[in-house]
Image (cartoon, rainbow, N blue to C red):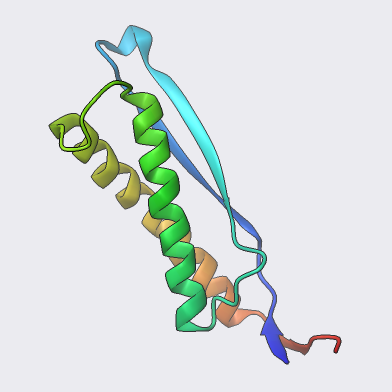
Length: 105
């Protein structure tokens, strides 16, 4: 089996301004992808799925007791997903640029 090696985590971070800047909090979560082959479409899809799930959890934590249809919650998810996109792209690019090696059988 041929695999490309890459860094194995990306950080989903959100600075949530709740009420005012005086009570801003930063919530960080790590999304691991060491088990994914990001040179394959299925691996990229799974990484994106993990990021979407993590973003939802972070926004639920940042904005507790809110409807999933709430404007602030939806904006949180949009902003955080946008923030994660460069990290996802960098992980994919690193995987594709890494030298291939034969995995042990």
